[in-house]
Length: 481
Image (cartoon, rainbow, N blue to C red; front, side, top):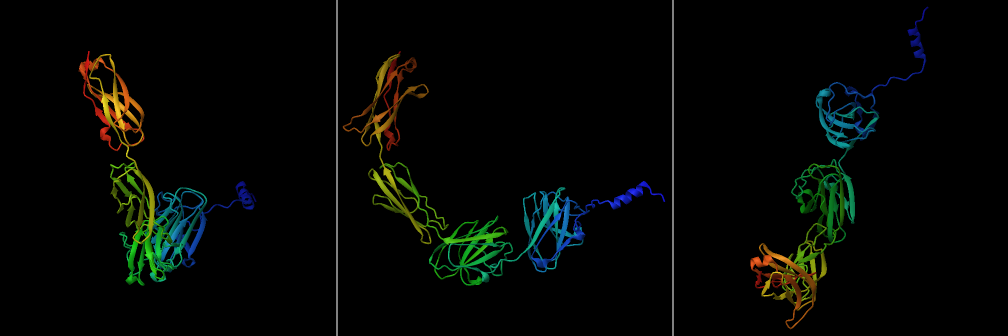
């Protein structure tokens, strides 16, 4: 019997060890979707995606479509929320949820997608008992590695209903609860914050042991939230004490032994983990300022309240002691001091719930005032002649450093001649401190036929309380050619 080379080669191949041909995962096709047991509560699976395919007519709802996919199915026995999470060993991964509303691939309705394209690691979807839902997972672009999903049933939190409110006694208190599946029960009040009902709420019953003011704050992880506080004993007799949104703090007075109910929820459909903090309300912070900052006896000093309440209740009253025996109330009093001196001003503030704070600051009243009482200029001059201009300053209050600018008139207005800076001591008896300038007359002055000198004095390091007498203009000086 003749054995051909081809037959011999085939026989050798059968005898030699070899590598098995790679095959797609068992749940590569929709029809072979892995069935998830709904009684497990949480299901996790990791599948090697290298040989996975996309079958004809397979739908896509994620950003870049599908390149390799596997399928799962679940028919819940209990209605509720499910969280679908993705965590694969490659980058271009996704996991999508579908509801079966018809037969086959064409009978799927999209519920959401967690994909690398949007940076979403998980989604939640609502499922009804008895209906079938499909999970499609894999890669948007050809990849290798494991495609991993986790599907969890999310039950309502223990304090979802008013009757099951979590009891809170001592403070500070903090709690964190997964409120993704929180609901709104029949008869539940709408928080009075102006944003309507939340996507679901949880409840806390706070019974303080000490009469005091307390601050509550709620925040959803990744979402905006609101918190409302009520008194009462059942849903149909609750009285609102206040409400705050967007993570703001709500402060309210509470009596020892009385129960206060806290309703927390997400805004604009937000769901996730909610965090609650309850603390004794912080004291307000008193602060104020005044204008001008360097007042004199001629100024009406305006005081402004800059106080704030970290507890969020706000400032209700302001009481002022102005340091010279005068008092005032309200946010923004004005006051004129009769004499120079250092005055201690005190502001006391209170919040609507009775918390208080005060602050004292010293205000220095200093009346700085110099005046130009002399401006000596020559009556006449000739071109090329240098003459002296004297500016005399009087000062009766504090020793000052003064800068004097001398100007002379020209065809386009006043032009700077020179600047002198020197000390001006306090002098009585009408005596002045003189600033002496030299000026040489020019042909341009002769063309005009006259020169008018102007002097302007400025305090260095202080504000002149009466600036109107810091400027003087002399009679014109005749200039000859």
